[in-house]
Image (cartoon, one colour):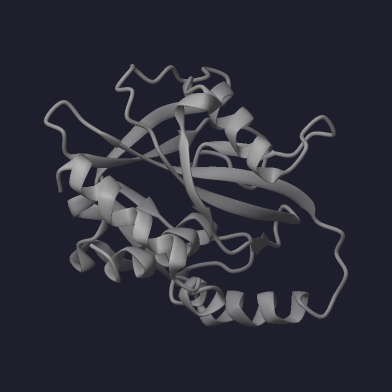
Length: 213
């Protein structure tokens, strides 16, 4: 889809109710859904984070979504696909500032160059005890991304047409933090399997987009 057309249409999601938890659960196995429901009854005092789903034009003026492959490190989200973003710091006035600051650090996009369309539903990630607030942002500068070498292994540029293609949704047998050899709903994008919290956030975005694109 042409980026200018996309930018005009996507603004309409500001007025839509968020699909929320039901859209998240479409991309989670039943065992994780039950775990998340149980966690809602507990005060886990989660750490906070903000991320940006960044949409931008490629050289043909077609719309793309930026994802990142995180580096391998000792942690539960090692070598996984995610959004640019990260943990809140005390100096951040809110989670939007967190998301923009971390996106700048990880992929080199300045906060002032991102037009935030809206925030999405928060999602809790039990293995790392994080509660994440996603934001949808537009970036039309077309300046090259600059990855943070110690955090980001690869930039994964996903055409919007692929993201919206239902045939890119699949299931895969994975060993996760909560089960071994379990069938997990996932997106198959640019050769990568996108599952877990990132897939759940993508599900909410896709449901919103289907109403306006």
